[in-house]
Structures are given as structure tokens and as C-alpha cells.
Length: 309
Image (cartoon, rainbow, N blue to C red; front, side, top):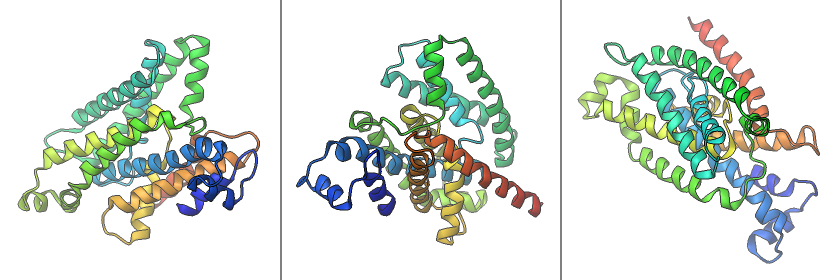
């Protein structure tokens, strides 16, 4: 993370040396480009990547399935629907985008949870229903964009790719605060979550209130996903890949939150740097790069799961 962060602060239309970066950060050599343009983007990649990694870990623990991530089961699409409504029906202010994203994600999560709850909770059923709901919500999003005014539609389509470009300090205060509160909240229940990941019976005998815990996991996962979507657009596949990569790096039996958060931060920072470098001086949206990398990971994951079956 530190290495990618330093590279992100050095790289741009003009290269800055590490000495110039450290001077800008310490205040001995002020630089508007580094402190006001590049630093917010680097920090956004760090915090948003960590939030997406935690969201993916929560839903993969909840479903006990490596495919159970917000972007696969439709929560990203639901948050995007809420943001689209804010853009097309309302005036599209930052507060409306944030509120619309959270409400859209919660509505889709509620629908998926209710449809998958049949005489008990089933993680596999939730994933399958989530994939179907994701397809339907994506179709609704396309219809909303096609019905919107041309300027709004162009902005919505560009924003839907997911991008950290143009993010400034004024965009980060509230999202960083919300993510910090959500991460602190779920960290306080991390032990109970890992107990529940072992087995429902084990969790109940150790005093874990499963229904309340699952509701909290859903709320925190949706909150992290929707907060990132409201600022940067839907960034796909970070939440899918980060928990599994983090689990393997940590050698853990379950899906721990800290490795997922750190891996998500590295993946999003790395994807954003690749997005800036691949077709320089033209910068790609980070969602394009994360989707390309995540698509390869998803193929590998599906092949592995089919091989097990």
C-alpha cells in the first residue's frame, strides 16, 4: 500500500520525485498538484478499496460462498439504481446521490434476503437469487439511462464505469466518516461473525444472536458498497476478489476482515494506477481495469468450484 501510494503521488501528467512528494506532505515544499489533486485520489483508493474488501468479506461470510459479493448479487446495481434516480428525477446533489445509493442498495438487499429466506437461511439460494435480481436491476438501470435526457445519460454512463478521477478533499469528508463508523461497528462484532461462519449451531451455543448479526452484516456491507458507489460509481470485482486473496495470503480458515480490507486497498490502488498508465495520457476509469482483472479471477474461481463439484 505504501509503495503504491508513493507511486500514485509521483505519477501524473508530470513526474514528481519522491523528494518533492515528501516535501509536499511535510509542508516544506508545497505542491498543489500533489496535495490537492493526487493525495485525495490515493487516499480514496486506499479507503474505498478497504471498504469494498470488507463488504465482500461480510457477504462471503454470510453466504459461505466465494461468489457472495455485492457486485455479483446485485447490491452494486441497486446502489446505482438509487443514484440514477437521484440524477434523473432529482437534482443529483452529493447528498441525494449518497442517500439514493444507500436506499437503492438496501431495497435490493431486502428483496434478495426475503426471496432467499424459505424455512431458514440458505447462502447458496441467496447467491443464485442475487444473480437473477442483479440481471433484472441492470436491465432497469439501462432503461432509466435510455429514458433520461442526453446530457444526464452521458454523465450517468460515464459515472457507471467507476472512477477516482476528479475526487477532491470536499468529496471525502462524509464518505470517510461513514466508512470509519461502519468499519468500527463491524469490527466490534468480528468474533461473533467468525463464530457464525463456522456453523449456526456452534454460534447459537456460544450466545450469538444470528438474526441480529446477519442484519448488521447486511447493513454494514450495503453501507460500505453504497458509500463508495455514491462517490466513485460502481467499482466491480474488488469486493469479489479481495476477501479470497486476503484469506489465502493470511492462511486463515475463514474470511477475516483485516486481510480482506488490506487486499482491497491494494487492488483498488493498483487498478487505478494501471488505469492511468495503460493508455496515457488518456486515463481509463478504474472500473474498466478492475472488471477486466476481476473477470479473469471470476473465470478461475468458477472453474475451481466446478472442479470441486
